[in-house]
Image 1: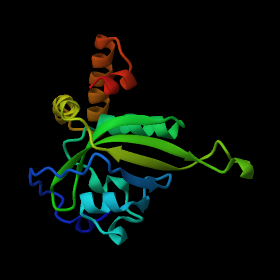
Image 2: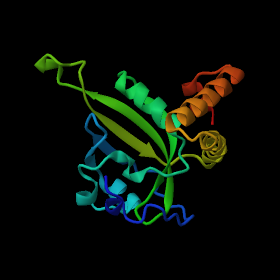
Image 3: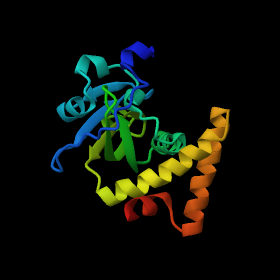
Length: 183
């Protein structure tokens, strides 16, 4: 996607946006991660209009502080037909940021059509995260991004930060899911 479609992508304001605890940010994507639905909360918090989001890759809201290895884990899980929960920092159109506690699931085809186990897209619901969890995630993500920055090759960077995350989980004797819910 052209940089111009994202606005001034290099600009980060350092301002955090928030939304109400009773609100849920919802989006749906196709199999390639292109947005097919964005609710009003998503539009308001991201600062994008519906026409700007529909058809665009969901990473239009990717914040540079988000480690690549977390996205790799997310995609591995959902493409395999499993759900995942994750703390995510997103970037609004104007460079503000907002944290979410995301629940991402695959969408399966209509069982009556004979393709009930075929993944047809993805659904993400995001809630306001607890501040202590955000602080813990921010610290972990900074360490993972620092590891990624040590490698010139993107794939090597993602593998190194993924190995770092796996080691952390092994050392804690916990699974990713248990770790996320413990934050």
